[in-house]
Length: 315
Image 1: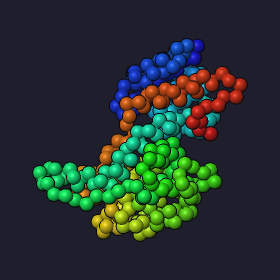
Image 2: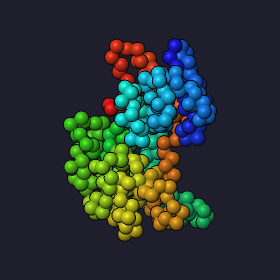
Image 3: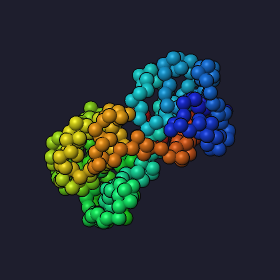
Image 4: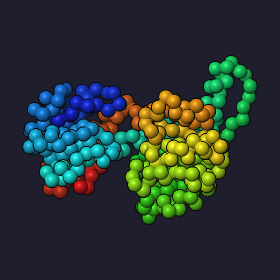
């Protein structure tokens, strides 16, 4: 019987007991244990073949004598002790794909908010002001999605019924994608020049840090809107503020910022053409359901001659 240990730190404030219940439903023949304290983690990890949670530090890893798989509950893995896991021949998987549907809905909602100018409507409602304002139409627009992973692809899928032209920008354009066009990052500015709505859905790397800077804002049409659900540092914040203040772009929907959390006195809070949410697009009540689907499939692969783990990180 495979032993799976669920670490105590939950996701989005949801209790890990709910995650454990989802795993039990999918793995009736496995022993699912939940650690509620640091002491329980140290005790229960000793004979766990699978550990799942946000992070396993090297102290806990030293105690994990039977560990074969660490199933990270985040899509990213840069925070993990990858060298130590590799030395112990522990497979590592991620939660990539769990966020696709909900973040894609957030992106589409943000775009539509700027298309129909809902924030302006809300402001006039607060003033009890019955006065018409001009709006826009999404059909016929060009939406550029930078990053065509699970989230970027989900965004494109949900835009398919809106009559838009889509451009995908990715590091390896030869892989193709679901967009009408696929360009490499070297051709980013060629895409930006034709972009009405720019969606950022890339991981933060040395290549993507500061990707959208003053030069990018100068290339974008003044009517363009930026939607960032990637990471704050993908956009140069000072250049973004300048672009918003000078109307070099029409607006920005920011679920991530740099710095983050955004300080209460930061100017982005005060700009009417900036829509800021507190890194909230990743929240979904179905997080543990989708994560459990991935983990259960990987647990079933443990005893295969050549395991084919979903979302495996190649160490």
